[in-house]
Length: 195
Image (tube, rainbow, N blue to C red):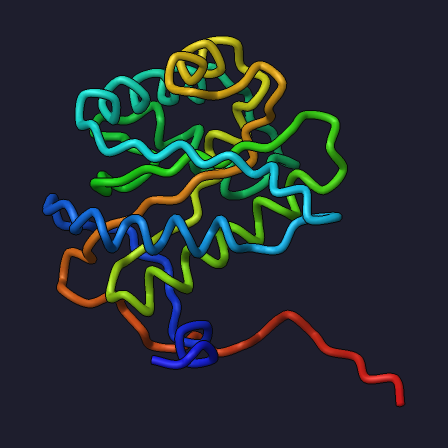
């Protein structure tokens, strides 16, 4: 699969097999993230790769508890509102029970933290598609970046106190085999040419 095809056919996967992909495939996805561009070549994006089921259960409990205490209003971003509402129900997992959760972080007070991490996450999603793996960008941890309970939990797994949680990625084999690669119609993302 060439790069343009991998980009155009990449879709979010929200249901995964329990089967853990081989370490070599996971490392290739991680490497794609590490090769993403960064402001002034800072290379400060930090990826925490979590494959331990016990940690998955614990972090789900921590995130569910933190989200369930959040207040939502009419101006709350729709995805955050959904996450808060879902956290109050049984069976909630914020990363779709994927066998791999990758937490992305970067330096606090670094102006390109979100942009650099966004590039890394996109590279990893495109690489996952090319390697026949499913993936999905996860924002829940970013929304909880300032939550002490969440931060304290992640400190024990390598999050630096000088880092901000910028995103996450669910990764694994799509439940139905290969990821859904049906391109979505483009209804947004307008382009203006100035010639």
